[in-house]
Length: 444
Image 1 (cartoon, rainbow, N blue to C red):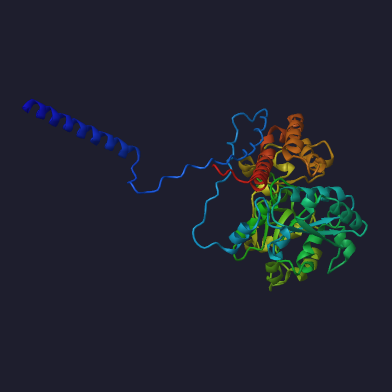
Image 2 (image 1 turned 90 degrees about the vertical axis):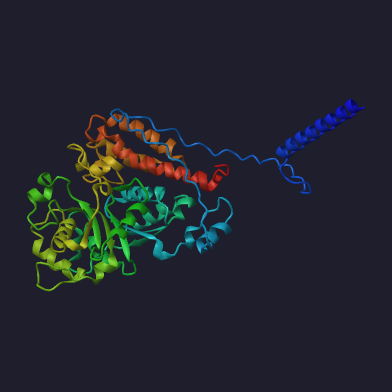
């Protein structure tokens, strides 16, 4: 009897241990206490279409080995904490892929771009304006000063551009007018009608700030970027230009000028930012009278005093003005006004070597002769580009092939200087198109 009771007790003890083991195993598999509702099964995940990959890396050039730039990754969108502002609410109200209409941008946020075109400068001016709209983001207003004979053709050509580009700008056509002095004498000063730029503060009285460029300028990145330089002006600066030369001892002004000029090498006026409001409100020091003079009343007596000594017309007059008023000028780097002088005798624009050319200035007629084929190749690539085509396939890759034919020139031996910014600009435009029209990758 005793043996049977001991065996029964051992059996019960074993069963109790087994039960405890089973309960502990179940607790590990399901930590929720009894009484909680069962978890619903996970819904099948929705599969999203993959985001298209970026274009392949550009082909390398002779002499450009080891200069591959890292692939740019699409930016991650981070949620903002706090109450959404009006701009955020507007974005939420838009449908996916729908961008804000440029027509809703207030006029004070527009970029104002001015150009003066006379004689045979129609095509050159249109190519410059085309380069501006190809890459820029903000809405622009073009102020085109031209002869009466060219006005209908300007209007016709600009209205023929695709709607996707014409919605990015408005244009106004102005006659060539000079408010003081002999109009014919002003008109013949240096290039035809070039002196018109001196009178822009008096003509565009409703414009606060302005970017003036010569007709032979090409934008290789958004105009928005050079427009941002206006924010860097201090309280006395009212205009911005690039140096005429990077090496003063071999520059034109330091060797040949017979009149005062800004700094040690002078400035080039082919690309000029202006705060017109400040210009209109400033009294300028001068060599004419002890007191200051307003901009418009200073132009004629200044020209009459120095007309026998100036070679480059209105640019020389600007150099004289800022010689006496150096605190009024902001000098931006040569990459914003890159000319043949920066490479035809050897590369001397360090900013362009680091960051690439931002604004190309093909002075001396290099777009139309064979002296500087690198400049001509860029001009023809933008001129011949069909608006709706792919920028990489129809502009960038053909441009690379053309550059291979220019390596016999000093400018052609540094293709990366010319292509670095334009490639970056095209890549940003491509990424923006993918993110806006395809939508960001929700799994990232």
